[in-house]
Image (cartoon, rainbow, N blue to C red; front, side):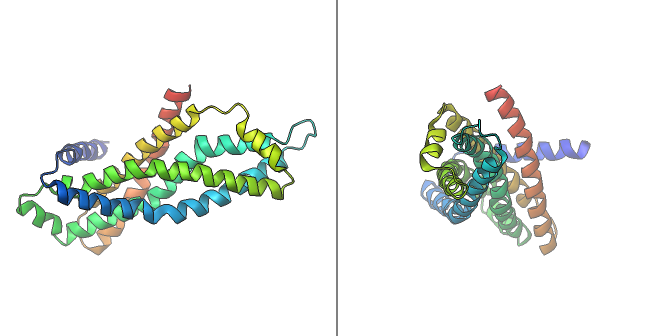
Length: 246
């Protein structure tokens, strides 16, 4: 328990160092654009492929679980829509991105730590925490909501294709998509995504920044970053769902 509180204190201290005004705005913008490409654009195809197939599977499973002829087929569209918007796109996809983006962040910072590049920045009088970590946090919190909204759209297309293969007509599926739709669900998903993006980037940066040892330590910090980020995401998923939707 004491180790947990010690780690939490180090994390809070690190975040206090991170959240500071950059001294060189042009250099910071260049670093931010680089991070946007690494954490966002490079994840586009992963998001598209996963969302397409998961949407199709959700629609097919929903169709074959509706056995009663009294249940209308448009409920396939309703179930696919709510499953994708409320849970899969914001939560499950964030867990997947924690594995891809989080491990990348931890490995990058861990490698810089063990090769003493971070120490060199400190010697030059640069706030290494802010210079290295703040662009990653801003990039993830800006780009992840876009990825999640894209995931919802692609997932709906996948669900439509899966519904067609399971004998759900386009008219029935589209009616289900529109049936009692609440736009607040999108807001709810975006709020969760922003929180999850901050968790992924900050927790992964923490483990990478404080990595100790040789090359093996980089791998260990990357693993710890993914596991810890996933656990915190699941915890906050419950908290946010209870606060926002209850």
